[in-house]
Length: 389
Image 1: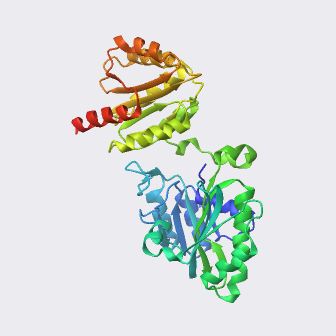
Image 2: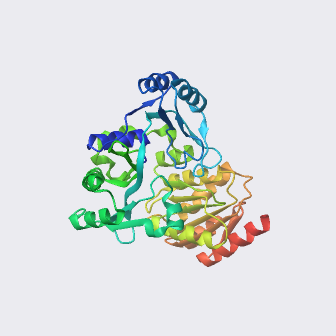
Image 3: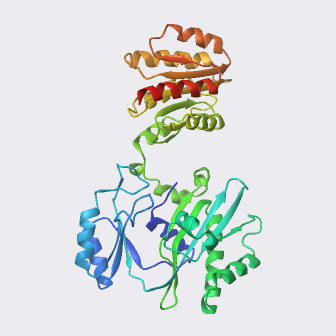
C-alpha cells in the first residue's frame, strides 16, 4: 500500500524524525490561512501516489499567501499527468503546504528490499533532490549501498563508513548517524517495503529534515498495523484493479496488448515473459489461483474482454485442483455474453481433463487457437498481432 507524502511524514514525525512545518489542505482557503502563518513563504505540493510531481508542475514555491491559494485553486480537483501516470493522470484531492526551507545541502536516503539477496538494503547519496535512476546513469559512484542483516540491524561500522564517504561536516555527522538509525527502526517496526526520503536536507540553521517522503507498506503485513488501514483509499485505485480485487482476483493492470488469464503466480510471470518475447507486451498480470471455480474464470474473462485496447487473449492453465474442463465451460459461458467477439483466444491447457476441455471447445464460434506449449503460443500471438499492425 502506497502512502501520500503527508501521511508518510506524519508517521516519520511520530517516530521522532524531524519534518518541515506543514499541513495538508483540501481547499484553497485552508492553503491561504496556513501560508499566512508563514508570511506566505511556502511550498505547495500536489498529493498524488506517483513520482515526477515536480517536473509535471505539481510542486511550486511561493512568496505570498495569495499566490499559494491561486495555485491550489488551479490544481485541486484536476488530474496531474506525470511520466508515471499515463495520459489519464492522477486526481489531486489535496495539497501539502510547508515552510520554505533555506537549504544548505541535500541528500538521498532510502531503504527497500532486495528480492535477489532477500535482504533489506540502505542507499545513501550525496546528490539528493534528483531521481535515483538519473544519478545511477550519470554518477553511479555517488550511490552508496549497505545491505542490512534484519537480525542485527544497521551496524555501527556501516554508519561510520557512510558518514566518512559522504564527507559530512563534523557538526552534522552525529545527527545523520542518528537519522539513519531512526529510519531503519521505523522501516523494520512498521513492515515497510519502501521508505524513501528525497531529499534529506540540512538547513542553513543546522536542522536535518525529511523534506520529502515516500512510504510503501507490505500489503501482507497490513493486518499487523490496523492504524494504517485508514490510508487505503479506494477512490485512488484503478477501477479495473479494484473490481478484480473485489472479486478475489490477483490482478495488476499494465499497458500492453495481450490479456493474460493464468492459474498460479509463478506461471503468470512466466507467461508474461513469453508475451514479452513476441515483441508485444502483456496487458495485465492475472492469477486466478489454483483452486478457482467456474465463476472466477468467467469474472476474469469479463475483465479482460472489457478492456478494449487488448488485441489478443492468452489463457495458460495447468490443470490440477482447477480442472481444464471447468475453464472450457467458462469460455462457453463467456461466448453467450460476447457472441460477436473476434479477438483470438490462444489457449494452452495441460493437466486434469485437458482432452475433455479440447473437445468442449471444438464447436465454439469464438476465435480459439489451441496450442501445446508456450513456444507455440508465442508464435501464434506474434503472427496475429503482427498482421494487425
